[in-house]
Amino acid sequence: MRPENNPDGQRRSFIEEARRRQIIASTVEVISEVGYGHASLARIAEHAGISKGVISYHFDGKDELMSQVVIELFVAGAEFMVPTIVAAAEQGPRAALHAYLESNLRFIDANKSYVAACADIVVNLRNADGSPTLGTVEGDREAIAPLVELLADGQRAGVFGDFDPTMLARLIRDSIDGVAQRAVRESDFDVRHYISHLTRVYDAATRKNDGR
Image (cartoon, rainbow, N blue to C red; front, side, top):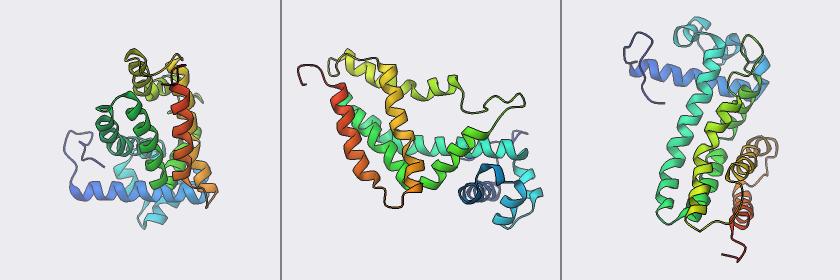
């Protein structure tokens, strides 16, 4: 978790950051154990060995805490994946696509409970009018935009064949996002084996008709 400024513009102390990390970790564990609906602040506080007041000091209620859990996962995921994808892109669009698939799935494999908890949050966290707080159409578009651009760049370079980059990006994201819940449910689920198969599927899907 990166140091951030608090609402008053003051940089949080190391102790404050450590406490926030503790609360977020406990939130993930409680959701993994009892689900979003039963993950009350009281239960999270008990799990963390602190009072509800400590949570309220660091987060403005359950909704803000849950949103921050998801934000932190996306930040951690980007820090894990982006350098690998950027380095692979120097070898061309196909290498970048392979790196995108593999780095996403390796991150999920290393953070299965966290990813599954965040999926639970995204589905259940709602605004006052009942609309999704996080799982919005606009948010989905922003999430796949880098992948759409990667695929389109490959087409412009003549490396990838003829397909709709946005549609294929959605298919790829669906293939990736469905792994976390399965990996949590099935103790013997082999993510590395899945990586091998998924890479071959989308390698074939992006190839030109002449087989290149």
